Image (cartoon, rainbow, N blue to C red):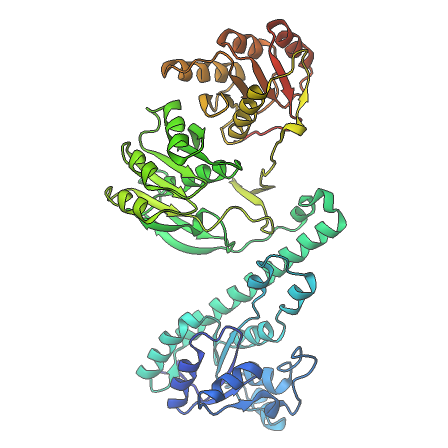
Length: 528
C-alpha cells in the first residue's frame, strides 16, 4: 500500500503516563528508536526501554525549569519536512536533521489543575503547556508523513495496525489522528482562554464577578453517546459533553434502561431545583416544571409532601433528592410510576429496592454546581446562539423589602421563601402557592399572570389543599392589582414578588385592603 509510512523513530513526551510503558515496549519490538524528555524518559528507562534524550538531538539541555526543551529546529524540522520534497530533504541533510515518524504527546494537566479548590493563578500558568501543543501542531500539519497521538486510548489501535502492516501506519489513520490532535489543542487553548478571561473579570471587578466573562465565550464539545431519539421519535439526538466536570451529562447511571433526550432535560431541571435548598428537599418534575416540592426532616416526609401537591402529574415524573436516598423513601417512590430518580448518593438497600423496577433510571450526581465552574447557559436560535450567565441568585430573608402595612409572621416568611425558591424553576409566567413545608399549587407557562394564579389555585383545590394562610410567589412583578384580588379570594395571606411595576402602588394598596403581607425581592426569575 503506497499510503503506508514505516515508523522508525518516535518522540514520546507525556504528562499522563497511563499505558505509555506498554506502548513503548511494543514500539521497541518493531525496532523503533524512541526519543523522550524528562520524566517520560526516566519512566521508560526504569522499565528497561532504551531512550534517547531530546537534549542529545538538539545539543541543548532542558532549561528554565523545563519550559524550554523541544522548541528546536532539529525537533520541529524532523516533524515538518516533507519526505518527497527534494528541497526539504536537502535541508535535513545540510542541518543533520533525522525525520521523526511518530509523535506521542499529552499535555500538562491544565484542566485538572484549575478544577482544584484554591488553585492560584501562578499554579495554573505553570500548567500551560507550550512545547507540547507546538509539537502536536507541527506533526499534525504533516500528517502525510507523520502520525501524532494525543490520547492513550488510541495506543492499542495503532499497535494493532502496525502489527498488520509490519510496523507502518496508513494515510487514513494518520489523517484521523491529526484531526484528533487539532481538536485537542483547540480545546486546550479554549480552556486556557476561558480561565484567563474569568480571572481577569474577577480581578477587574470582584463584586460583579461573571459579567466580564461574556466578552469572550468559548466551550468545547465531545459526543458522549447517541440517544434513541430526540424530543420525538422522528428526531435524531445525542448527548454532548462540554468538558465541565459537573452537571447532568456526567451523572452516573446506576440502574434502569437508557436515558432519553426528554429524561435528561427533565432530570437537569429537577436537580437544579433541589440544589437551591440548603435543607433536605425533594422535587418532582414533569416536562421541566415542578409538579410538587416538599421539605422535611426525612426524605420520606419531604417526598410525601412533594407527591401530595399533585399526585396525578407525578405519574411518569422525575424525582430529585438533594441528600442521600434511604430505603424507606425508595419504597415510597416505587409505589408510583417514575421515570428517573436522581440524588447525590444512595444507600445500598435503596438501590436494591429501585432495581425491583427494571426500567426505572437511577442517576447519581457527583456533586452540586461548583463555584469555580463557569456558570454559563446557551440557547440556540436560528443562525446563532444566545449566551447568558446561569441564574444562581439565592434569596434570604434579609434581602426582602416589606412594602405593606402588615409584615409577615415567621411561618409566612418561611412559606414565602419556599414558594420563591420554586418559582425560579417554573416556566414563566410562574405562580407558586406554598405553605412552610410544601408547594400547594403551581401555575406555569401562561400568557398572562392572572391565569397562572387561577391555575395554581385550581390545582391546589383539586387535591384538597387549604390555601388559607398560604404564601404566593410570582417570578415577575404584578402588572395590575387583579393578581392580588385573586390571591385574596383564595385565602393567601403573604405575597412575594420582584416589584418594579409602574403600578406597584396599586398592588400594595390592594394588599393593604385585604391585610395581606407583601415583600419585594428586587430580582426577577423569568424562565423561558
